[in-house]
Image 1 (spheres, rainbow, N blue to C red):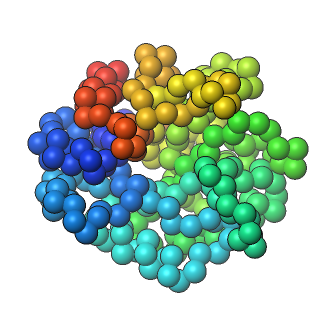
Image 2 (cartoon, rainbow, N blue to C red; image 1 turned 30 degrees about the horizontal axis):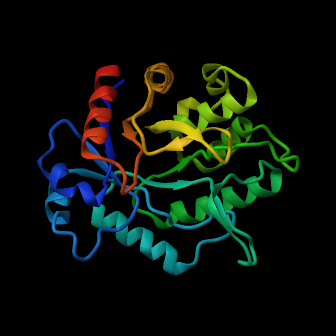
Length: 262
């Protein structure tokens, strides 16, 4: 395996520190740069930038405006690949919106939709498309396939890459009462291009752990070390924390610990 890029998300409130930082290979862009961001020109000149914005909900076709926005951002960032989630944020009729990304139904119908729309998006991009798995807090009875099987069939039908979010896998294993390594083994790891790692903390509403803008635990970093050995095509590992509450110390320490782990 070639040397992995180790990076983080661009948090604009930490722009000054990131401009001066050492030991960070890339930054993922969750939002476009603000027009008044004084650090953006130096950030763009210095870092490899990964497009990780919300492009659209691929259970429905993307309109021309959404695709053109994706192309424009990809060109601005000079990104090596374009990332999107297997996410559902709103109902088809637009009546209801969710506060957080929700996984699709792992059904034949949703598989066909995601395959068709991902292929249409991929054909309009100049860079490879990678797709990120979504955490599931509970199983939905309407799903017809296990998530890893659904993902394998999707990747085989689209030839897209896999952005493996390890905390999402860890959380699913936790709520299923499985060891994370056992659940991870079911996923199509040979398609992984990038891995995300992050912290989890106790969520009062869920009465259990959930994703948080915090440093990854030693356990999570151990899970990362295990996963990387099983992802032969992986090119990058990203500390996945994007929040105004994130401190420079937490970001830099997390990236350093990831690098030491790998």
